[in-house]
Length: 439
Image 1: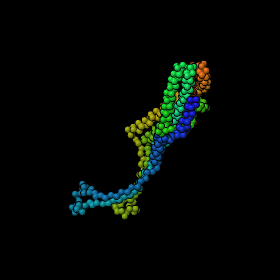
Image 2: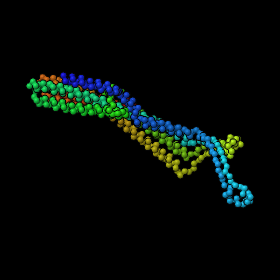
Image 3: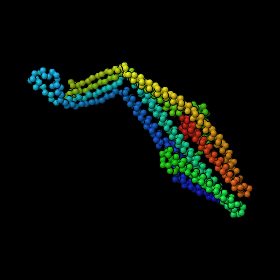
Image 4: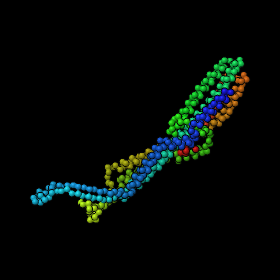
């Protein structure tokens, strides 16, 4: 039969395609997306930047040590320009002629902050910023994983939809051949044959659209993985119902504690609190020590001679008295930013509760759709087989066959849509709870 030939040809085509296409599971798709996605790499670079900020802030704890050497040659006529120079005897003035001279110095300079109110707060703020950056990396990874899972599911759905249509085209082709045979035997009218031909061509047009949907879904998945859009892919997983064991209240509680965006905002609130201490420290006393040890000579052979050594030590205590309210303004800004972040946390917590509720409802709806669709597919397939058999016996019309085939196709599509909705809703629920969307 032609249906058998079509199925065999389609199987050969799939085998040839699978041989040239990459075997890809959901886990593989997610792993490739995470390895190549720019947003993940940007977040990782931000963490590296914040590590540098921590090192920078910690540098204030350690001394600043440098070695400086100076070689100078100069001529200084300042004595000749002295206001009382003309009072000297003429013979003395004649003898005093400035001549060029050399001066050499080398020294080790040392600077150390002994005490500062803002030093510890600045280091703590930098560490909190790094932790917030790590949470942002986690957020980017979860978003990328969710995009990869959805794109993979969409490709599976498109392939299943194409399979349903191809089976439908095969059934209509067999039906058309039987109608032509009946017409040749005088048992069917020309109108029945025309209706079968039109119905077949309409299904072939649907098949072309389904093939285009498969190509579009494959291009989307390749884009998520940052590969050429026409790279062949052979999915190895399937759309299936995976139970979700966590209760609703537990899901909300976990989402409020584990969601990376919420953790980032909470760390930002702590960070802003440290910034308040940093800005307030600008208006408080600090103690610094500056020291230097080296040599100053006119002749280089005297360098490192103890008689020409030069050293100094300076202890500086700075007590700010009035800065035009500059520090107070900065503290007020930091506190305002802290309050802003606190309100953002409250708003995001409400949104997270809504996200969990929406994903939970979608998952429940998908489960009911699948339960109903499983029964509908069984009944629709049985009805299509019985209608086709009745048509061959002359007990059913062409319209009956078309309606039965359409009902079977609709039932299978509804079930596939339910499986897609269930898989995406489960991944979305895991995502809004702060979990890995893949598992």
